[in-house]
Length: 333
Image 1 (cartoon, rainbow, N blue to C red):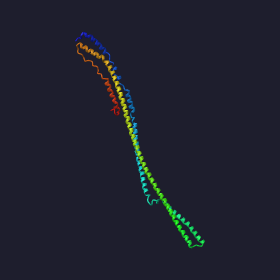
Image 2: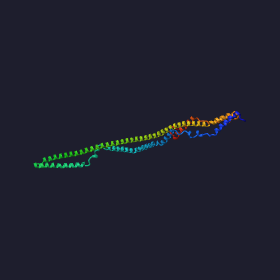
Image 3: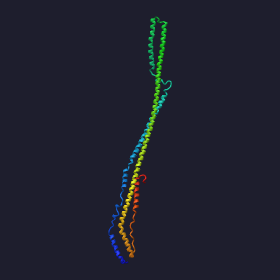
Image 4: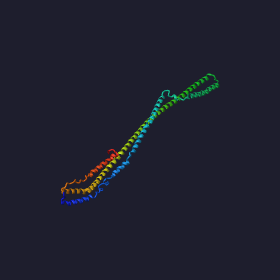
């Protein structure tokens, strides 16, 4: 079918434009390449650096917690020996009380009597007897001098003298016995009092040992509490680091997504500008074909464009969520 004359000029113009357009390669570097990919946001860089520097920072708290628990176990282990000591003090007090019970009664003084008392008494009485012999001799000498030797007067005087000597001797012996008994009784009483003081001291030691055990147990509880606090600090350190890294990463991802949306819009604009002549020529050719009575070919379809904003939001949500999943921090999964 012949082309109408009024169409020929337009056809020649179309052919010239098409030749000019299709003879020049499309510069795809204007809308492809890394320049259209958003780089890592500074907040993302900071999040990664803090995550790397904070890895294992909680270990010091864990070490301190383990040491506190070990100290608590050691402290509790020492309670056994302290308990043994307390039992010893209690047993000692019981023994003293039992011994003190035998220090009462009418014969309690006997263990404190001097073993040499009878010897002292015998020696003293012997000396007394010897001293009284001289008095008898004086009476006899006086009777000789007065001419009454062997008389009744001499006998009476000797009888009275011997009676007085016997009374004095008995009084001296009783005095020494009473003195020994008094001293023994005082010593028995003092020993009873001393045993009572020893009993009180043992009881006080037992009480002090019990108080020390309570203090030791308090220290063990405090050490155990310190271990729990250190463990809590460890968890807080880790969760705090996770929250910081997650927040920085998500904010950085949001900004990265916005930047990526802007770059994608620039990329789509450059791509549209590069393919615009082909679309225009396609429309031109379709019109000429219709005017000449021919069958139009398939019309040029431009590439469907993705919304830069929806792409930006998708990037922010996707990349931002990775921080919680990668580092596994609580509350980010």
